[in-house]
Image (cartoon, rainbow, N blue to C red; front, side):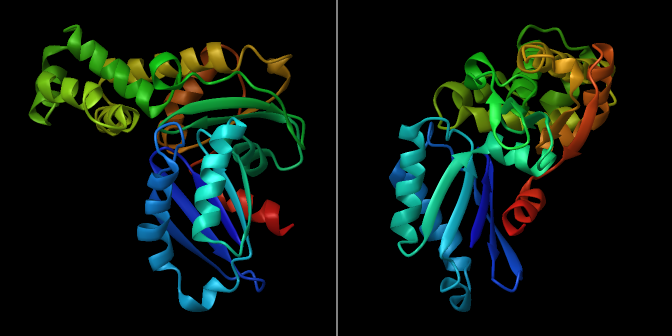
Length: 280
């Protein structure tokens, strides 16, 4: 079988044999809000299937896919259809990446599971199903605490000339330029990925007090809008999956402590937890 975990930037495809041998293949991210069925098929045909060894093909009789943007029947069908066309002998099940985070982080226990990657999301999980979800409105109106949000806030401070002179000079020496930013955000595809790329720049300058505070404020905003709205939220530990939560764990813990939230697990990727869940 295949267990797939897909965000807007990267997809990990874990191929598992009946012997429990496994191999991972990485492709670019998939999100049906930004890509068509044809776009997704192109990724599968050019980045996934050429890297599958011939002796593995016959073992791929089911696909458990968890992906960003798979939050409605229409979007699920786009992804399911693309996978079925490329792997016609496989039974395909597509679920939202929120369920992946809950299963990977919490297993069969109750808690709040969150995603902090290129985008962000959260849910209250009862040990079997997602029982509450504060909908994410994407990078334009939400995705608080995500890589796109951190990048956006860093660029907003730069655009408003609020950065200290030394930091501003360092960022400009690393390619931060007004025209490049405007063209990339307003004229090129996948602006959420572009904004999220500045989270890496923020991480490289995290020792700067101003950058550190920008990141902490993004996480505080996430807690305000994506955690505090859940029923009895203080009764649960809040766990995270995603590269942003993993690499900025110090700032995440600080933001949580500031408002009395208890952090549980922080995983960079959910694939290990998902594998254990599906092999149980």
